[in-house]
Image (cartoon, rainbow, N blue to C red; front, side):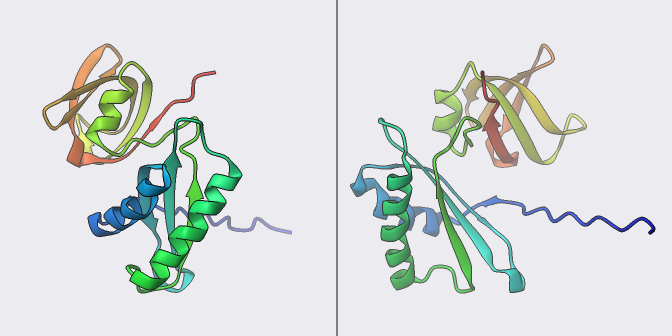
Length: 164
């Protein structure tokens, strides 16, 4: 027996289009949930993945995810914002909470964050450091003792680093 090739499929999650995010927020906010973020991934025959992160003061349970999935599925079926086949996934933000908005970056200042950039900045595409907040439209991150100002528009994804 020889060596066999190993295939790895990476699904790149991207922030969902604004209209889709607004539809999700209009549906879930009256239910008492904060829409942390909405991501859309995939194309072609495999279908797409629509991931919705929700939160609330008391935390998120499986029953919350089920209720949101049921309500949101009905609205998405009627509104039909995604033309191709897709799978809906509803989740809590978890310990490695994703950060999407300027308000998120302000709220979690003082926490360690892992950022993936859409383009190289200072010869880097990935940053891990202490989140310092926002200055204008830039996220401030202290990386190896140096404070970097990263334009929010250049951030592909950002997540908190879990603290144990």
